[in-house]
Length: 386
Image 1: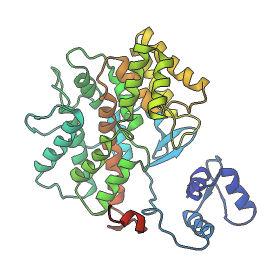
Image 2 (image 1 turned 180 degrees about the vertical axis):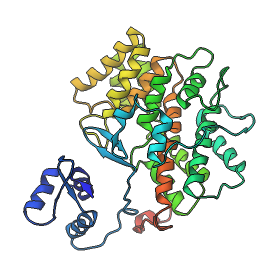
Image 3 (image 1 turned 45 degrees about the vertical axis):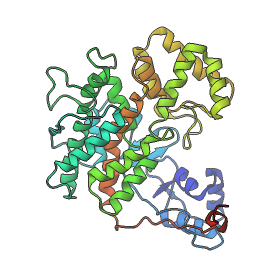
Image 4 (image 1 turned 60 degrees about the vertical axis):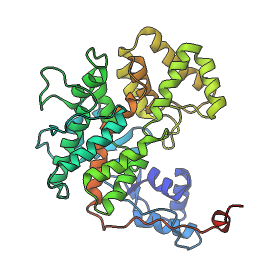
């Protein structure tokens, strides 16, 4: 069953228009047991979508993906198995949230295998190296039973954190992932609090069918093992538009500190037409994850840097720029505590291992090879160069 917001999104209409369709008998609505509106059958929505295209079965999407992992609500943000991520942040540790997404009770250690010294320096490259090495050292990497996949995911998450930096004295396999990551990102004198890192990991753990998640599900549909599927997900993080967007927002805040908020925003708009860390394709009225994470990040910032973040947000709002999103909150957390600009992307990558694994497990229950986009051949695109 789909919520009214999701049904409207699939039809490409407003919710008000959807209820006009209901009143005209074009689609049937069902009462939501929670009392929060109406529900719609997926098959009814797809049938109506076909009718709206003049009865033609077009193939503008890869496949219809029905998921029980995460639902997006405009007012609450992502709901993991029915529980709001903004509420889970600060209440449940990342490991427990990951197990919630995987639909399992905690039943294993989050310990990393011995992989040797990583020869790379960039954190994203180090994460990719770790995935390759974890797969290479797993004698049964092709075991796709749910329990085996979850064991591999715990192993991967711990190893990915380990590769970020040296372990502090006294760390064990029971040390929380957030504490391990906070120490490694901060070095010998960590300034990131484990609580803020844990909240960031929880809030970033999944976001329905984001680009990277779709890449993981496509890999799962051809029955690639978990290591290779997660590599497909990390490949999408290399660009600036997904996962790496917080790095651009980090630079925006750095320029605002150096040159002033007005000049930073004006120069960025002149060069890019958009402000990194602002606006969201789903949350038109504001990303609920932004406030949840910023409230934990702000106590770690100096008064001066806290004021800069607020000035940037207020100046953008005064000029009708779309509200800030989670990328700006990640940037505030990393820039405000003196961390490198790729810190947000690193946190994002570690967090998404939880969500990617959940979708990987879910995709294994579907028929394989179901993703096949259709191309529309164009003579202009296929013409030879002059």
